[in-house]
Image: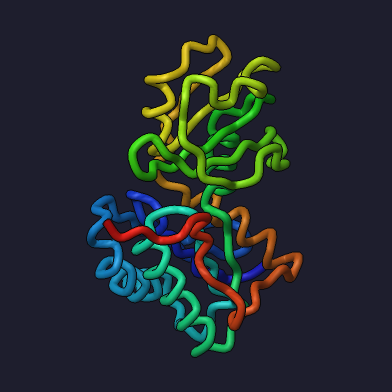
Length: 220
């Protein structure tokens, strides 16, 4: 059990939280994506003051590694790595899609499949599929959506889709097994996953850590 700073700037809604022994002490949310960079450092300072701890009191720094916004991932990863290095604290990375799935699982509580979708360009999304125990059935990937996407999995039963890319998929599918839920912030799920990794000492090597973009950055 530890005192962990959790950072997520990978999605439209960013969150920064401080958790102790598995429970969130305080969290700040930012819903303006273009302001994630300026929000992050101010939020960290405010949270430390609010819970009356020093940065040196933290036991670990955790951050979502992606996929997600290229700029957001770079901002979050650079800040988290910088703090981890400066403070000499363990560094933890959390998959964004895994956190989205866990947030939906804990909200819906159905023994079905869960598919987070992050909006990318045009009809493309970043996605994965998990069961209700958070076991990976489809590894995180980039996918161009068509009406036949997920056909094999949907033929077997219900899938709950969530995330910023879900609306694209909703406009294409007519499957009675496709259900949708809205999950915007994932602070609670990130806390659960970072605490688990901390207790199991599953830390990420600072020198080899980088954002999980899934595909190369395209500037155009």
